[in-house]
Image 1 (spheres, rainbow, N blue to C red):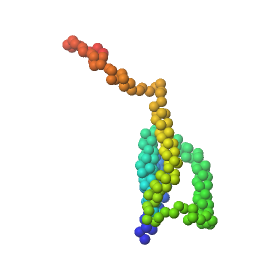
Image 2: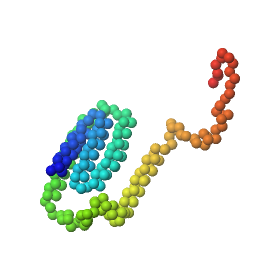
Image 3: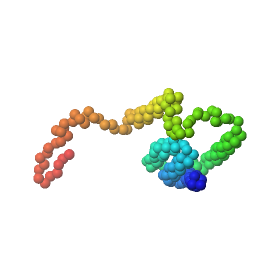
Image 4: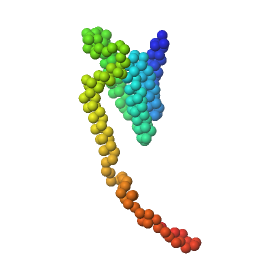
Length: 203
């Protein structure tokens, strides 16, 4: 009984927060609603026994992606009038894409209900006493080790590319010259002036 109550509670909050995410006028509020949706989706994953996915939702999406969105939105100078104009312009395209996604979901549900594929035979046998995080880790670091390392390499290349683009030389930017700062002497930076009484100092 408590599982059903928790499921409906999490599901309702996810739907409401998702609706508020796309309907909020303030982008910061949209990001905060999105974080709430992620937390409740993590609760749903815990209910079905997928605690690894729940942990990913909280750590990766809430702790990194959503917070990054929040920082970017707060730092950008967003023209809300232009955003609303774009929303009205592409409303029908977005509506058509939404209907197509809904149709795909119903087709997938129908194909799942029709059967024809023995998922029990294709699934890897896992001991019921083994937590799914341990099972995923064992499979990831044994059978899919090279693919896992390749994914890390791709992320490393993306990080290096972002750093290179950030520190590119631009004519209108001023960079720090560490050697000039260290080699600078005090007598080159300080000038002693014996100013007469009643007169200012000439710079």
